[in-house]
Image 1 (tube, one colour):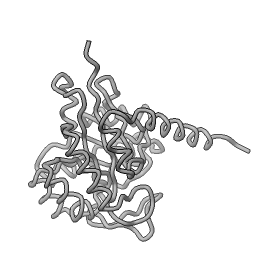
Image 2 (cartoon, one colour):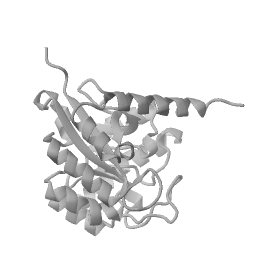
Image 3 (tube, rainbow, N blue to C red):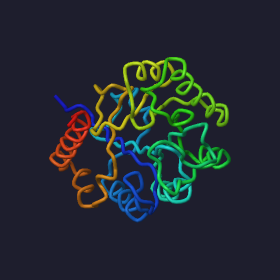
Length: 250
């Protein structure tokens, strides 16, 4: 019996020389995409998860959170050259401004304006919703949660003239209420849980690969070649330990 398809959902934020784990240097990103192209693995849309029977044994989805201007200026030209079609999750109320949420960089990184979003959509970039104001959705009351989740997609759809089918909660913060809310409005939702997706994954809490962990290109090449399981398990274990430590009180 053949193994279930595996889907690597890559998570990016900023492609720049800014500090912090949500920024990846342009030359590193270019090398990651070159390695992906050389691997021959198909790059697909999240819509492919709706028909897992049509998936290859392994495939890749490329995602970006927040919609920084460097996606347009740096990432997209590289992706376009390889004919890779990514999805970018937008905080709809922040378009054209700069990151201003908890945990953002200093200095703040600028976000794309609507004109560029519309142009990129026409060129083949897919867009998803990422709330309106980038809050911790799990901390919101019912009405605020519904507003942030539903209105974000409505606003983007109105500007682009196409349905918005996919969502990413800011910070990957989720709960039963958040998952139920996103399920009412979107076909899929991706989080920040580290892992590889498959057809049995919760389609409203899909794991992703944080690409900051794969800035060493030989490690990324090993993962693409199917030799990265031990490293991924180690990263998952270390992350679990860090998360558990947050709940320990001295």
